[in-house]
Image (cartoon, rainbow, N blue to C red; front, side):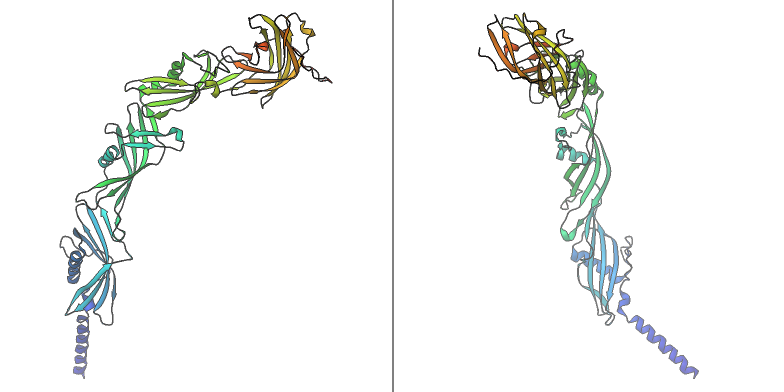
Length: 490
């Protein structure tokens, strides 16, 4: 009995051993997801895996040396135990590139060994080519100088657009803040790219600029050496600028104010015709905006307030244009209105004090006096409308005997021009007394140089009005039932 039990035990062990030794699936490498390739031994430790590596390298035409071999998944045929599908990841490297191939391999067992029946790209996993070397600072500089060279830097405000040239000597510093290599995906035939975020400091000799940029370079897979080439370059923020000490002094507020001395306030000859020269004495204040650059020239806008203007507080917009000749800055021009030579078209009045009494002598063509005009501006409203009274006193007349006439009107703040409408006709008698003219509208312009109001409609009422305490200032008429006078025939 004991002998039978012992024999049965031996048979069971033999059967188990034969079964284990006879299972072909045990000869395949396990799907661990880990690298099983030993670069020093140049082996995976599995005979079939080593043969599979050689077949994939040869038939797939994969360049480089193997650095990793991973079995990610294994789908065995448990019935026949002679077929299995493997998902593998094979990584190789050359001096410049890393290749990662993901394959699905159909394996078959016959004649006591496993062989690769066929293989194909794994559609679920990307196969990629990645450069092993990133774009360097020297390569970035070479791209800036030789590939980009001229860059049109256009911020949101198109008035501030500027073009820059990157030169070998002009680039002060290049800082690579970050870079990310995007591998090529073999199935899409893409190319590798290096996405860089950089800061560049450059100079044109008189100003240092700092800008942040996105630089994209792509890798030429057909090259035998590392060959990154420029693809795109865009700024990601407005540039900043810092003037050199020499330029800062030449374009300072103080120097520009001094440069303005001697420049006449060129104005519209029809309306103003003033020869006022802008100096530090004729200006109450001057406020500068930022410099606007264009290559080796720059423009700076100034808001100038003229001094001692008791009727209007006059503001003038002036554009200074300077150019750099390589060693110093020169003031080329001062324009008071962009595109025109009359600055008063771009001047305006504010804080005016029009209310008050004005008087002036009315003269004949030969310069002799024939009347005195008295104006009183009584009200000036926020919308520019105004009201007052006028008394026109011919020579020899008692001012008390002359009727004052009410008027309304408006002033143009940009041109400092007053248009006055009288409520009735006024007769202006001149010469020897036999000539006269009836008028109901008067135009008054402000003369910046003399700080006076001047009539401009007809020579019969042409006079220069000075503001002051007029001894015969008219009083406002009380509205009544009056019939409008009809001008007499001359």
